[in-house]
Length: 399
Image (cartoon, rainbow, N blue to C red; front, side):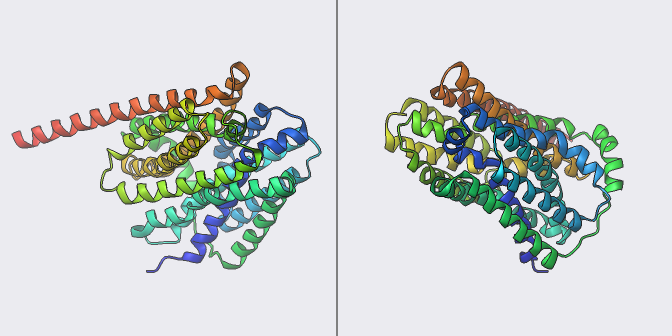
């Protein structure tokens, strides 16, 4: 059975515009700050508000919409998302922009919760992982192209145009979904009623929770610095504002290479790769703190940071599938989404606090500390796993 590429790529396109919109304020920080007369921390709060809405609203809205046909729900969510971006483009001030981010975050969270199961229902079980990977690859595309191109557009004609273009793209994608995407059968009501009791009894819940805590630490560390990277590049590293889009483009391209690297090496080195990637992130960001006055070093280290980090979400998702029991996988995937968004929103908030209490130059140090904390957890879990395997091998040999 061939993969339904057109359907999977449409789902990926939806993820692309959703993630681009989520992180667009990062690249548009100078324009938003100057036109609206707000601080860098307030621009960062636009990320926090969006991610915070995802964390708070995803579970209840998913429950409320559990009986809605999935295709109809996707189209409705995209319509809401288009309206949210149009409101952002027309916002007369900061308060209305915050409201637009809340509306967008609510639609974004449910959209993510629907896309992976939708992709899984389009294919045979043997192709599930590949189908989900294709459908969610739009997130990488957003980092590689969406945010940098939105930044370029904002720098050329203003930040409002960037949000307006996203709104238009969402409408086009929704129309294509209506025309091309086949409907799928779902039984969300049964799953929703059984999920909580199953989770409470499942023996894999503890390692899944530990994995989610690790995700929060890594994402929190990354977002603390990355949310304000445009301002850091200008004010600390000394680049001109016109260089930001190009640097973000390089950053995104390096992240795509990281995804490919994780895909190639993840199965061959399932345990060793994650500690190596996290160590690379910590060392790269530490280098940025130490060599901020060296332009070439800054560009090289930003590329390395993104390359090492790009593969981390892939490995986390693979570990989740390997760790969670089949009965827990759906709810565990929802927890993982929440964990990522806690880190994203919390990082933007923490970064703003650090800037207010200290300076932009302190952000890389906070990132290094949080990533090292995650690395300690990963190392400890790996050690416990090796000991458990050794014990099982010994017992098997003795019997």
